[in-house]
Image 1 (cartoon, rainbow, N blue to C red):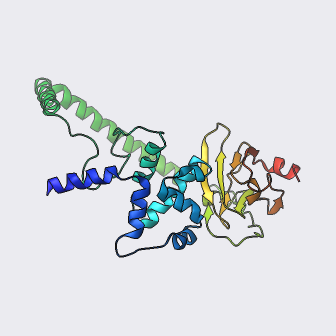
Image 2: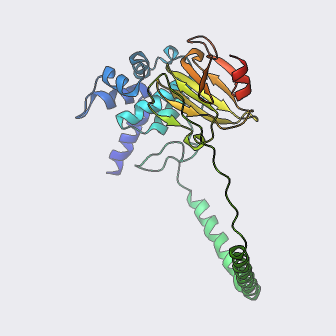
Image 3: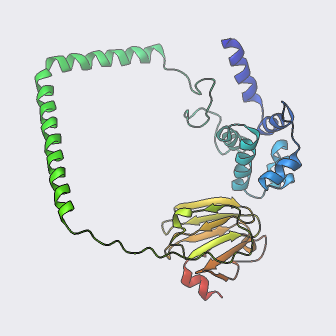
Amino acid sequence: MTEDIVVEQEVKAELTVGEMLRQARTTGRRKREISTIAKQLCIREEFLTALEEGNYTIIPETIYILGFARNYAMELGLNPDEIVLKIKQELGMVNGACTSTADVADEEGPTCAMPSIKEEKHFQKTMESAWKFVARNWIWFVGALVAVILLVVGIVLIGATEKEVKELAPTAVAAPVVQVAEPAYTTAVRERFGTENRESAKVILQAAQESWVKVEDGRGNTVFSRVLVPGDVYYVPNGDKYKATFGNAGGIDIWVDGVQVPDAGPDHTRKSGISLSPESLVASK
């Protein structure tokens, strides 16, 4: 039984990403055509074919390769994290060495070697030394435990007193939340992202064509990165320090306070450093 699992893992490890995807699509009870899956995922058929053939040069950017592969793997019932990791290895972005069990979720067994006998003995010896130390100094540990208990009781009593004071104090009236009306989108909404910003967003992005969108804050931290397909909406957080990168500048409609402003650039053109400040976008009209 164990030998069979080991052999299966070795065979699985030898397969390329393309072979794994093709095998999952063409074998078993649910054999499917690439054209059918391409329509369901809104991904071009040629890109899915490129993934199965391992011809990544057809797909324009690495972010697209990893994003398409993750969606394709989930649709075929494969582990998306494992597929993404193997593609990174094939592209030379990471080496093949095991880094952690979080890299690849493998339900059949651990991904890294088990601790050696020497390490286990060292752990046992350390635990025995710790217990001996506790036994020799038990009175100090008991005193510390009593002190912690008294501290917790004091905190609870103080908290109860503060709660009583707050209940007696007049209740502050919450400021009304300003709700921003949804714009008259030119494309039917397919899926919404950044919905936590929906009530306050002044800037809204909608994909009219397929495009990769990345939004960064003033410190350069990525707050949103995804391939949007026609109809997808993203609510930009409020503020004047957010900037965006569009993989297809002409494929993203930009709305400011419900009014559409000009596109950030022509179709099928990558553009970065786009200010998402409402004032900057309105000034570009």
